[in-house]
Image: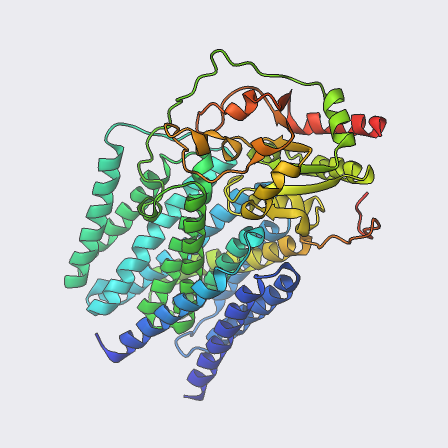
Length: 104
Length: 462
């Protein structure tokens, strides 16, 4: 195990720890948006796919890279859009009867 | 050199924005803004990567980005909220597919493993193992939720032995590859075993266990991304994958607690859940059925109504009628809140999303711990297509398969109206003594049709 590998493990453990602290505070109200949000974020594997598709190493890597770029892009685009769509729906109720929204 | 610094800076910025985005999800008011920042982070990381010195051609990249956007946009904008569980399940498949293919391309490019060092091979092993089992596992979950595949658990003799052997063989190949990475046959056999294992993992899982499984697959997809980061030496992948992995893991623990299942049970999914059996029978018990008219009178006079939605509401797509009914009760001076059990529905937070879509304000959606003490003050508890999460057997029948599962204290309400299609037992196949309670009246029929009738009747009664 070289130094770079150890640093990666540091990064992984600390990121997991931050994730734990942040995500345990997400209310169950928002658990579905949380899932779609983390899914969109982990589609950062797009970054790896881009290198595979664009480094022109051999045909197989390029084609696999292309499919990977496509899949990851689906999750990036679709994931962030659907998360936003869901979050837009969560509205606080106004105490007085007039809701102002299309409530009727 | 400056190029490398720029790339790393973009990754660092993306990582920070991702964490801020997730932190914003602790409150619904800040959530939208935070996630938009996270999306900006993603854009920054992608643009940063495009200047990478290894990237020499852009045709396939552009093609992939265009095709992905063309497929992803409708999946984000037009998929109805009721289809959200299967939408989430299929997105785990795409994430895992990307990670697995990058892993295979990496192995192939580096001399079929001959130029792969042992630590990288370990990372690649994790990447394609988690990735391949998540691809098929998520697809199975998608198929079951979408109704392409039978939703009931598929079990057969020796299933656990078979699944465990598949798993053991896959891990053994991974270990062998770490010792001797230059072994393409073993590598592709490992991928194939992962794909088969994913199928066998989700095959025995039924609808009510889906929240746990979807959360687990969420976690696995994240870990696959993280392992990709280890394999290609990219920190932003490690970080984003670890966040996703942690999130899915925490959700599966919350879900399994809400179903009173053990931690070990979580790690291996619903691996070998015993076939549910019916212990209570309905012999000698009678059910009181009620007309929409009578139910409407109760609701029209109620001061406090607690609505308990379940999967039945989602199936009937009755969330808009529920909100309409609640508004009428409120107009009559009553108070309406919603009791949300953590595993109601088919994914974490399922009921919240549906009710939010129907314009129910989120401060009326109450978590189980918060609402349970309030049931004794409720004039009417209106149960809409929920079953196991309101079954008192979980509390007072030690022989019941769901004994110990935390439930909503619906039986403490002054009166209970249950909207239900028929007397068929719920998913777990267990009789629900709540339905035979003297305070309970049953309103049979499709939830949407019953609610529409109720709305009309309450309008008249008021």
